[in-house]
Amino acid sequence: MKILGEDRPINFGMNCWIEYCELRSVSVTEMGEDLQRIGDGGGSGREIRDLLWAALKDGARKAKQPFEFDNYDIGDGMDELSQEELGKFFVEMTESMQSKVNQNGGTSTKKKKAAA
Image (cartoon, rainbow, N blue to C red; front, side, top):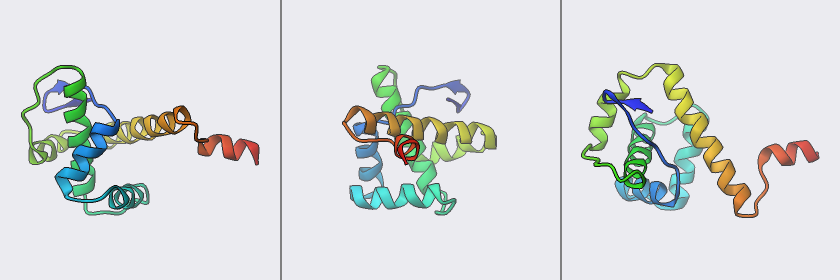
């Protein structure tokens, strides 16, 4: 994802979710509620900014790259993003989460719909 003047890796794994929960001082259940609010087009914007921060921080960790930004820096960087670029972030997040559900033996929403 190109933000703050550079292409930066993002990752949506367990460490991303832990970072998000720790940053916001919320439980996993509350994180799920935040994600649902975002998916429904609601929320305050802080949830999106903090989710992007967590994904970028974990992406940098996995890529062994330095990451010295706080969530406010990411908010500043979001000002540079088009709606399309932010949309791509959400598509990647959704696909990553769906992939993890499938890998862990769950069924995807797509499969359930196809089976119905």
